[in-house]
Image (cartoon, rainbow, N blue to C red; front, side):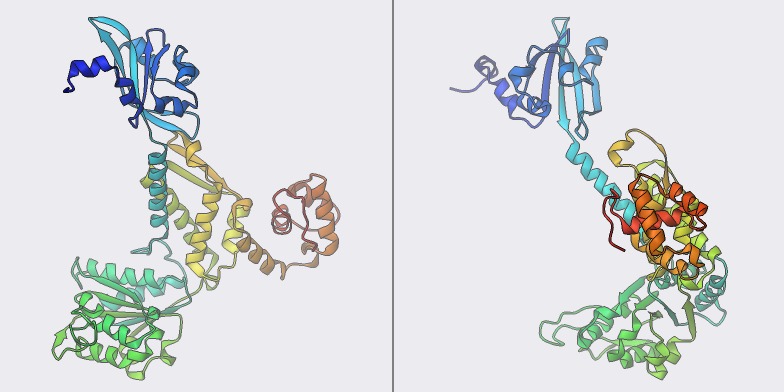
Length: 478
């Protein structure tokens, strides 16, 4: 027997087919009473088909699009519905018209919760990438104080009349050495010293634990140079016509002579090859060490024609720190707009801003950026709570700042405070008792002021955050 359209309809197997598709299906009469529900729809509503049929669609889907179709007798397509949070689906609904008579409506919907969550994760990753990627040109980040002379000197590396020079950048971890190298690269392209498509090749030299592998990576190799070797371009060839940025350059002591020869001659030879290759590369070496004490004198002389020192965050003025602070906040707001098309306004309380600007950041600018981003994250609403809003303001307070930053900041500041501003055992016991009685930081601070202690409420808040759990029910015994 051959299956035909007529036979298919007569066998009444359509419900079985609909139960096995991935979409939910609901059919209602003109009063909105369910006359058919497939298995997917019943599962989505947390009911059985028998429990649903014969009852109003709104008993199970309060925001049912079918109600609009029953009223207007027109299809509603690609409508996104938030069911019981976090459930979410997209639905298409159509009127049922037979022989010119309106009989009801049906809808087909698909659960998009997982897809929506995946899209949200992708958007969050996009935001994080935008927030943490190195700056290509950070003239707009800080252009005051100690950094002014560094920027001008950086431009001279490639912009002087005598032609581009090799250079060295030193400074503690996180002070912006990679950003400065990118600044030099972009400026060189801007003034035509290198082409618009010139490469910028960055390598962390500390990753090379084997000098032979390091030499192969930097200078390349030919097939058969050693067991298993293949023809491969090295970093110098990859950077030809552009800039080679050697980060953690103090770790290259094993192949300083090869590097010196390449810089002096403008030629490199792949490992195992007899032929030399001409290269035209600007080399920038960066390090947290004093390269004058590490490099061969000849190599240092060649690379150190321009040596720039990037001061740590602690060495910079409060004005410079505030410029950085404002930049990272603005960058966060911009990233949210680009990823979600939401106008995001971040406001810091005076106490939170003061704490962030005066905190100790051992990992310098990079750590300051990460702490600011973390604090904004902590104050931000959940994605599922935003809904259709396109304009959001969040306020960052002391409670949103990571413990370690506020603790270090306050420890350092307390060392220089008068005794009445320090938290002694007696003051600690008083704070503990008042906190247990339900007083907040501001009220405790006021009581301490009456007792002759000058302890601002935000310092009390720091102490409470450090010493007690979030419920305030346990004391660390200090």
